[in-house]
Image (cartoon, rainbow, N blue to C red; front, side, top):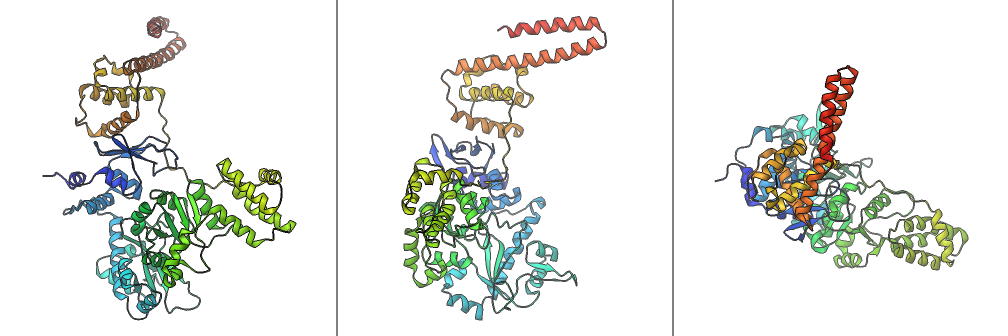
Length: 565
């Protein structure tokens, strides 16, 4: 019998399965590895150990832990929400919830879920007919939980209040607005077709509302504001349905709107998600990279200027995505999917590389036979070519541009040197640096050796040499030489880290390295002690306590002998 739902969840879920549902894992000996989802990197430094049910990044961020810590980190949620998410995956019922876990976030999730069901029940008549006219099937309406917000000022707010939710909670969920004049609350969405926006676990966290029978001056679409549940720079519409397909197809197809995603999916293009009215951000890209590094854009692209789309593409290139552009025939993906589903698939299969697209776009806008046209074409293309990291690939495009313009390659290369290049801000610094001292690094290496070769712990160890944070760890490793021992909770995370690290390390002569590390650690200890005595000597001299000075000098000379090893 399990002592807690946490233990029951851990017994039913495998760390490889949980982590693998978010990022692509590759077998690496007894472990699995991947590029870390929490910072940008090209070589995988993120490892998962199925034996101990842990994960750790040995790269820049140094994050690590169990399945709960991973879900908290990757979803950006508190422990209570991670518990709920994993309980649902494991099929564990949380019968008695700790009041502390009934967080504000949980209340907002409940509010959004009730609102979604409310809107679904209102969908009938004209709004339902409009969706059918746009080709949305009944199956898609149910799958995507499309609904309708009534025209009345406070229909949803009144409904949620009867369910025990306060106006302030409803406002925090982004579902109502407080009037500055009267102080009364009214529904944010009225007389609109409602598209719930889901997180990766298919929980509704926000809404997009399309106007229906509205006034001409009303915005066609309005979206929920950013809040505790909803960060539009991180959530992609439809990713909860398409993530698995993206991994399967090894490609992410991005469209602009809700209807584009729904109709593309309905037509058989399942690996699709929508940016839904916002610019493509670094957070979106980090999420997508968990599924595939092949990115297809199926929306308006603008080569000139510094459009939001162009900035998003620049970010994707900097993050290492292979980008292709789906050339739409003057219609949105939703319209193409409705009129000819097979055509949409053909357009995707014929997608151009980003540089082919840039060339087509530039040459279609300017006359390559005029001096001004050549200058404008090169002005647009050279900054893009300059960003190509591979010099061979860059040389190919230089040659292509020179040929198309009818000029020598040396002239294009010369202009390329002068072309401006603005590197996009890839990310804000979220990861913490690993600022370990030499003493801590040596202690860590000795601990890894002790774990990998337990017989080395028979060598006498003086725990005074280790940093305070490592003394308890080393003491425990000396006394417990089996992999399955239970360790105190306060050092468990560090012990788990060391178990993973030992699998990454290889030692040609373990005993010799163990002894050398101990020697270096002892030297550091002695030098620290000598520094301390030196300070005491200076203090005694200032106080003119010559007897104490002589005693300290004698003590200092004894310590010097230890350096003569």
